[in-house]
Image 1 (cartoon, protein in one colour):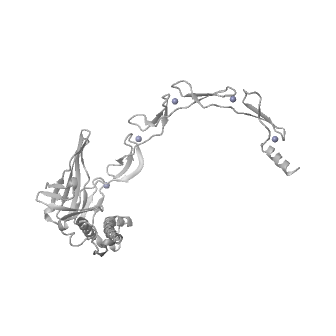
Image 2 (cartoon, helix red, strand yellow):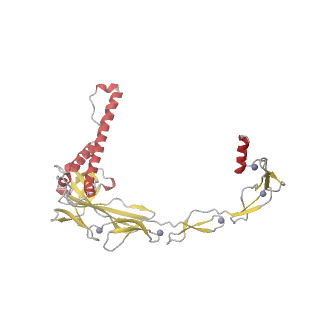
Image 3 (tube, rainbow, N blue to C red):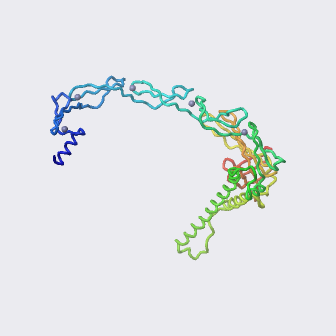
Length: 367
Ligand SMILES: [Zn+2]
Ligand SMILES: [Zn+2]
Ligand SMILES: [Zn+2]
Ligand SMILES: [Zn+2]
Ligand SMILES: [Zn+2]
């Protein structure tokens, strides 16, 4: 037996027979063949189907008929719409067929946009679905801090959570720098140390970004000189930076320094409670009026919060705290969370005017 015969025998052994498929009649879909090599007889059914078509109008039943043998097949083919909630109070969904209106269940979809305290004196919250009140899997801790108060024991501001009693102390500006640069104080984790350094690091980063802008402006100017030979004789022009930008830069540098002359420089006329009332926002017959409150105290600390009255009632934001100073006619606010703002201001006995304050340019003394 030659190699070719061996191969052919192998093909028949694994079912790869040879020969032409024949059909008994033009209206039959059963095909048969007898293998030319081994004589095995095989048969198969192969219909010739058209596309599926719908039967009755509002029904989802589809039918097709074989062109050759006339065999008919049926199937149900729905056109499912997007999943929608079954009722307003539950998160169960369903899908409805656009043709026959049949419904089928769809996956439950919660809206986890709420938090629920797990206990009356605990500050741990669990996520909650605002539609059906089912708990989610995420947790967080949300303290309800009281006002900052001076603590003699800690020699600095201290606040207490009104729910769980946790205490938070805050080192005085200036005094805070000393322990941070030496060994970590006992009881403070590396993470806490890092958190405490964050505001300072952010200040420094902002300062660096501002420096880069100034250097960029100088560089642009120099490049322009090289490209324009007519001006080559001119002395190097100063960078195009506004006075305000320079003032801002200096103020930031001073604020980031944490000590220094101007941080202690405070205009006593600024002390007190100021309020700004930007124009109310209104739409669709509703309006939201907000007032912003700023209290600057004699120790250089400030609190800022807003208070709104709208269709949903009255809301008051949690106060934000920080340190203030007023070097050279500018009000510098350094928030405890690292934010900062520097604005040129004009102080009057009952009014405060910020030159670039937009909606928040005009403040009135309320206390
Ligand atoms: Zn065969
Ligand atoms: Zn057929
Ligand atoms: Zn249907
Ligand atoms: Zn839900
Ligand atoms: Zn708490």
